[in-house]
Image (tube, rainbow, N blue to C red; front, side, top):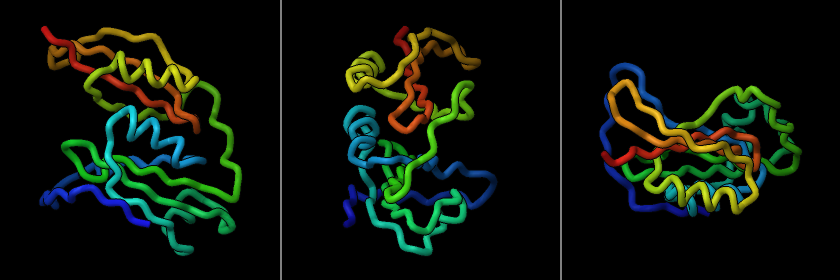
Length: 160
């Protein structure tokens, strides 16, 4: 059940802190791939059924009767940037109400087009905002909440 894109050879530094990926628990992998792969442009690195002794069970406190499918996604400049873990056999808890407790912040190529497609899925979105970063770069940002309650903030640098 593996589906691999071309594997990039990157030699990571073994010094200091390194952010490996975020892992989102989801209820339906196919539905989530419409967002993360088809709209946001990630590519599937690997997809597999998790073993019964998967580290995800104790870490996320998932009951043993649940079945897990693990999918890692690559961005153009990083392998395994994000992971989606589909949980079936149990209901995921409802997302917390506001304020949101965390967000994934992702740069995209065409923010208006991505948000148009996300809005068409019926997902909750915010109004776009133009801002300047501490580096002087101007960007547009806009957020949405995915099917399982994860807050995703998208941004795109603006041309001068």
